[in-house]
Image (cartoon, rainbow, N blue to C red; front, top):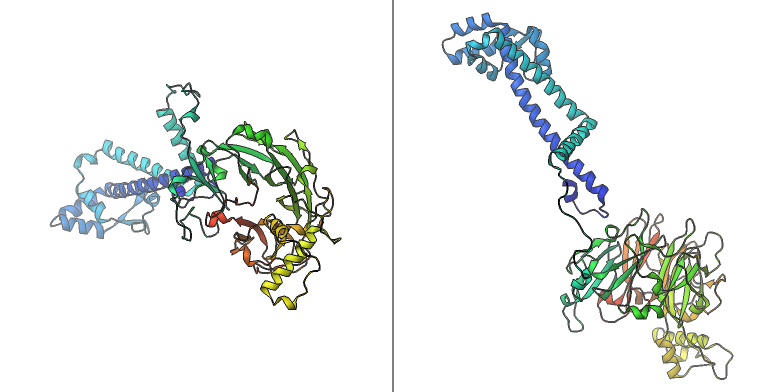
Length: 574
């Protein structure tokens, strides 16, 4: 129990509790044994003095008779060196540093002298002397036993085991009451009040729910309030509002899916840290939650919604959301994975979306959601989304809005190419110099069309392991057929390193970068420049030579200020 009170562990399970309890019992037994050893040695010390006096009874009586008073007798007893004789072995067992046998002689202590003077004559009989000798033998055995317990941890564990078995045999009684699953005739959920909850998930995997009514409405421009207490290396990663009866899906890196109603999530205060998800779900070692997805409360809408899966091996799969209902506590297989393959992302989608896959070698591919048929099996491995070469692997999947482009009058250019040239020109005019110093594009879109494409534009953030990143317009990624090798997403060099993350961002978002040595940085997305695909980007995090960025998390605008309705992952709402 002491171990449990010394800070809250990251992952607390039954094994940790048992280990802490055993450690607590070891400490208790050690203290108790030390106390008993001290008392036994004190009694043995007195007995040693009595036995020395009995072995030299004639001399002791003569000395006491010749003393003027009791104080003089005690002084004479302590100053005389008495032959230890057969008591020497017993004195060595006591192991008293201040009163040991020297050259076969023993000097009595003040406590021993006082006990000798208080000795009654009846203790000099043969029977009483036998009792003293028997008591010394028992004390010798006890002292040996106590020392053995204190020196051997194996013996200490055996004592703990014996005590627990004795307690079980003494106090255990058969259960006299019956535990029934259905105590009430109606569902227990009928007793749960329907209430809007704010669910927060941290980067380290802590989750909690707080009643929405706790957060009072504030005027715009305020500083807000804390939504979750986190440590320095942790940060709020996801935030969404759902009803207490809303099912939430938890997809893991090993392709499993778990379901839990919101009311079963740990209830906390705005300042609370929450509870580690590893203590809520039966996750195996090396498995973590990859995606947290709330489902719509209206079950009749599930048939019209789909989710897209992506794995590190470049495979994708599309399923109806209704395939992930009625999930038991031990979970279901959401997607079969090969050895070494892991689930990268699961996101809601529809026919009006595109899929963008990014790889660690700097490649990317964009194709329409409709290119992936709807699978009817949860156990299938899906189809190829991107063809990987060498040791390349997918590091991110983004669901983007699909845009139907129009023909540009009097031009052979694609509309997205015209838009990219025009927006690049407008940014340079605004940021660098005057309009006369920059060549205006020959073809320009109408203000109405420019505004329409701007409203539908997504920006992809790409970050490398050496801390370099950039933002790129999603229009830079042309739509192709799935299964190809893709196009270049970033200029991968020795300076930049491999890609570790790629996902859509908004101008008002923030990101958190974490290295393999625990260093982290939090910065605003609008501080990262917008460039083309075949560029290297800018420094976001200057890491040491032996450091690598291993994780990049999006801190959505609603996590920072709750000013808009976009969700934290940049995903389309279900």
